[in-house]
Amino acid sequence: MNALAARRRHPAAIAVLLLLGLLVMGGAYSLLAPREAKASAVTADTVAQGKDLFLANCATCHGTNAQGTASGPSLVGVGAAAVDFQVGTGRMPLAQPAVQAPALPKIKFDQEQISALAAYVASLGPGPAIPNEEYTKALEPGSAENNERIARGGEIFRVNCAMCHNFAGSGGALTRGKYAPPLRGVEGKHIYEAMATGPQSMPVFNDANIDPQAKQDVISYLKAIENETAVGGMTLGNLGPVPEGMFAWIFGLGILVGCAVWLGKKAA
Image 1: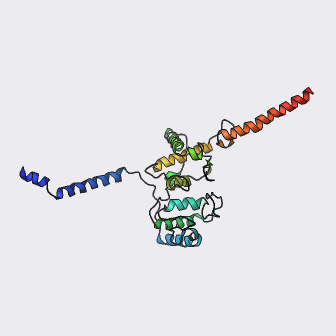
Image 2 (image 1 turned 180 degrees about the horizontal axis):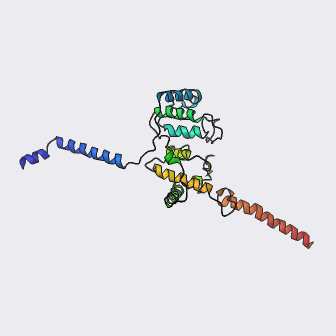
Image 3 (image 1 turned 135 degrees about the vertical axis):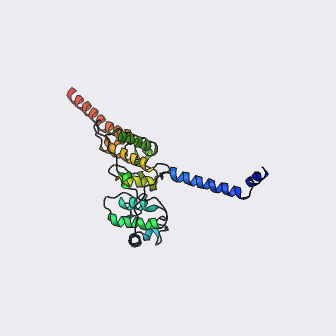
């Protein structure tokens, strides 16, 4: 008994227990942690091409080492997804200083150049990767499983996004001249990247908050309401009571005034 008690009080026992605890915790986390959407591997040539493009088009605002200047933030650690979103939607390079960078239909770079820029910025520090297509493709309504996931995406969107982007993704005004852009016609990849990187006033929803499958559910919900038939007639942009009230005042009141004038002339 004395020998057993001595082994239990051995100075190395605490260190061994701590090591075993760390191994168990690390193994459990690797099994249970949310899986990230991984990007494809890139080559050194791609990174070098991206650096050349960056120095020629982005360094004026973000600095030659992408560490930021008075005109633009640091890009170290923003990840490839942030570059793919900002450049792929035409927001960057910024045409002129503004409160918010607007999405533009004309994109300066092709997809190969965008991928090279993203690879270079990703090499500067860890950050969200460009998601795999399996998570950015919207689910087709029809099957019970897909309908359930689309409904779940709608619930996630209404809880986390509708207060800025509107329940139907029509966008809305924010403070100080900023706005939440409309989400209709936006690629699923860019919706995913916006959730993962939190551009401008938007919060970041990493995989611990909303996992890749749930992000796909949100994308599927937005595409479902974008493609659904408006059975109630004119949607007026799905902007709620403001345009509906304006419509009622302009057309409804106009009709009443017209009727009053007609009746007055008839009585005369």
